[in-house]
Length: 202
Image 1 (cartoon, helix red, strand yellow):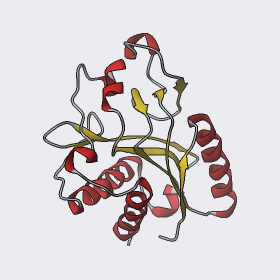
Image 2 (cartoon, rainbow, N blue to C red; image 1 turned 60 degrees about the vertical axis):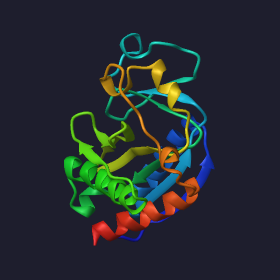
Image 3 (cartoon, rainbow, N blue to C red; image 1 turned 90 degrees about the vertical axis):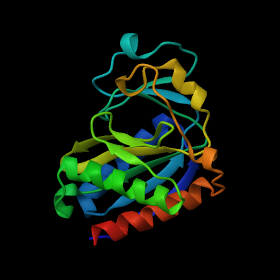
Image 4 (tube, rainbow, N blue to C red; image 1 turned 120 degrees about the vertical axis):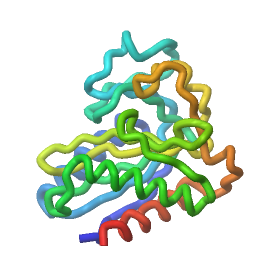
């Protein structure tokens, strides 16, 4: 089961992306379809369902959205690739941990193809290079169907992360594909990510 409907949508407001995911979740329940959407968000702070704004935000000034994903605080902004797979994990035979590992391993493979070495951190869930955190993962599973997903720093403004206690860590370091002179568009990176994801499911 590795046939997915997928498309890169460009810049999408965070709240609109949540509505779209909910619509695709309903469709997935009805049709057993599989969907992977890629996009970028205008700058926004998001808090996972366990996070409290008073504990995670140092400096306001950006829109704030409460999310149903796991994890704590993060920031999405232009130039960051965000990927939301809406998949029936039961049909795929994937538990939550295996699914998160699959998302991270797919992203790690993409980075390796670009000449970037990274390692997976299963506690502060994401991918790290020698310079800092480059990819983030936060999911929700509802009725066996996944929502939310991962984000990859490509050419977004990393200074925005100083406004929050990102991923529950004090003063973390961050990295992006831009520091490796990667010139691919977000759409191109998304397309290759989907190909790798499919290959890993075979």
